Length: 403
Image (cartoon, helix red, strand yellow):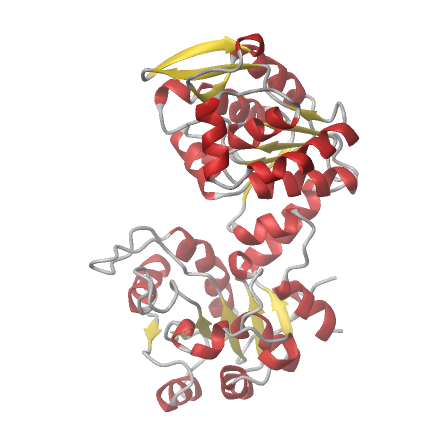
């Protein structure tokens, strides 16, 4: 459906490639604290350069006025170190310096332009058509032959640099974008049944919406829950989880989700699994209790051993598994057991596994499982919106304007 880098001859052509270099930055020194996304996109950039393209990189870092907002000079320097190749940087996006630098480029050269969010128009709320008429697109598009969209992690933003170029010039998917879409297609493929979703962590509203969407559209066979997602479903089932746990959900404004969660449980009875034993935090120590012991005065911090066994059995028979959110308070060694049991079983199964979300990735890294997942998504918000069935503006633009 979408054209990829295999469908274009890049030799001696100028390619504008939109990547997502957004990284963790020290707010005081503005130094990069990680380079994961730069490494990820370096593969696309290297391939373009190797194919003889003049590679013009546009990206963002933070939001104007926020502590993590900075120039892309450190990103360009890090990219150069990763590629072991000279990468030019210019502190301009659409001015004369940028235009002159692009015109002077030779094949296989790489140029990183300034933070695209230095332009107020970048994040302005406009239609795709209107974004194509911004000064960013009107200035840079005539200088290039092709637009390569590789920023899956920003694909849910209808920003000028994400959707605007697609209206006026040939557009192809970069390798990161291509892999993300293939992974999403695979996790939803009818050939990979049964499909099991692991929904945990603290993003409860998103978890409920994902559950509703995938079940109503026959995109999942079973859903196992943990974290605050599970606690909301426990409330929806009519169980009292105790004042402390109720307060946590109330403080996050999540109690309004109970009726919706109840409706999903009733409609899809037998497909959503919630814990039936728990580990609570009893003065900093792990204490396992049964459902009959609810309500509890302690914080529910993990699932119990019996629930772990049930979840492991479900996962062992899956052919595709989506991992979104840890099962318990994985940061605390006392309460990492549920996350460890569930994630290890998912990975040791023969299923195709996809993981997404910052806490999921952090938990996998802590457990030494990160490199064993079939595919780790680079997109947080974009992945969530895709899983909830929402159309990503980046793909919507391609579908509409790239016939």
